[in-house]
Image (cartoon, rainbow, N blue to C red; front, top):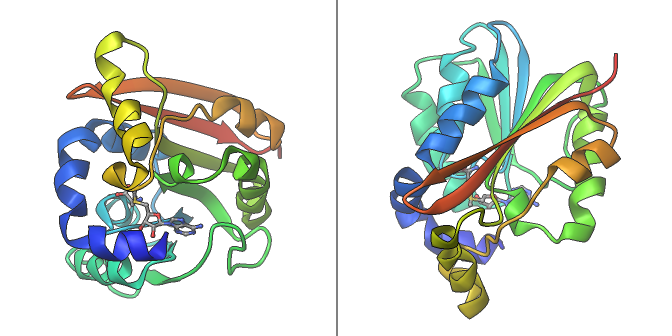
Length: 207
Ligand SMILES: C[S@@+](CC[C@H](N)C(=O)[O-])C[C@H]1O[C@@H](n2cnc3c(N)ncnc32)[C@H](O)[C@@H]1O
């Protein structure tokens, strides 16, 4: 994974801006970080979402992790431009074993990471997110999803042809797994941009 994203890093944002921008915007809107909150983003990539989360939470603290140093370098460059120095930290880390104590965060966010993980790992990883969230904490995820219309089918075909073409992403549906991992009030919206199907999901932990 790390090797794939090392060579994808310089061109990642082109496809992301073309086909993920709408879903990312909705995900940040649903995340609705309140100023002063502790926020975590997992798999920050080049920092496209991280920068938006920072700008909405200038007095809080936003942590971000990623497996790939080349992606983190770009995310740091982007975070510096958000103008919220000392209110964020970016470090190497793995979604499977988050480097934070239990009950640290108000909000956990991740975009276009679950669509890379094996389905068998969704619940354990979602439980790892739940561990670092406070009671009542929110989770917001964006991911490539399964096609809803015929014209959205080409992207999964590309994945089947050669997974690295899409950085290893394929369409997933996450709501079932969120509920299974203990999140409540789960909601989902399908977002299509230039035929690329994404979903945004939101859940809350019990208080
Ligand atoms: C498709 S990119 C998405 C980046 C960013 N979230 C965005 O929306 O543009 C996937 C990112 O997830 C990272 N990643 C993959 N598996 C991970 C894991 N187990 N833990 C942390 N980061 C991971 C990759 O290094 C890559 O930067």
